[in-house]
Length: 312
Image 1: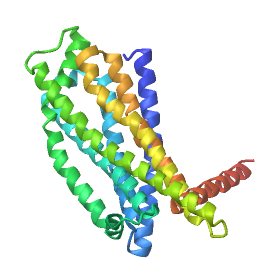
Image 2: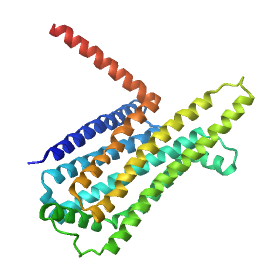
Image 3: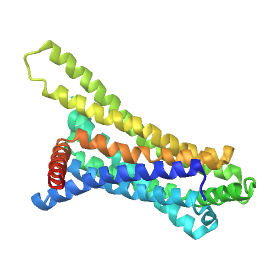
Image 4: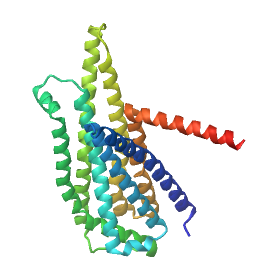
């Protein structure tokens, strides 16, 4: 039977899973309906749909891993099962991270304004830029896949430490593990640095635009609002991304140094924050998704009133 802490962990993880499925499922549903109606999707909607689908997969992997960790920890001793779980975890996390990064880069090129010819050239080829980023991420995924064996070893050791109070196994040396962990961390830092660069350049563009508008206040200030919306989107992404990347980076160090069951529960729970909450930030920041969400809430409210009136 799970302890009180483990039961709370399962409830919190399941809650994050449900919230994330609602938000990301809504994004996929709206864009799929739009695709059927118009027979096409904008570049931003394609990125959003890919991001939502990858996060749905990511949430399923996190949920399965959570229940394995609490209810059936002995399954961590099965190499083939844990290898499958780790493959899906690395793949879904990698895709979700890079789709989110591509979205930040896309917003930057669409909203920011610079006179540099390189920026103009890239802006006119934004679809190609996003495609290159996604294709480049696949090459990094091949490096990430090298960490699967080490992560299998982490999972097996976590079970041994938890169930038998043993110590770190020596069949994978700590030096080799550290090398793989450093590579894994660097790969996950690359998209974060790209998103951070997009935010800083977007901020510089906004500051320059505000300065120009102050010199000519009679002109319309629609671009400022677009800058501010994009800034909020990218800043929220970076804030949640910091939490997510921190949980990923801490995973390896937790097992190497702390080797604790409770520590892994905290890390796994933290990893649900980004894919669950960021979907609602995206819905609020996208006019089409926001309007559909308001319409859905209005419909549910009217339906609930109708049900209450019939019941009374």
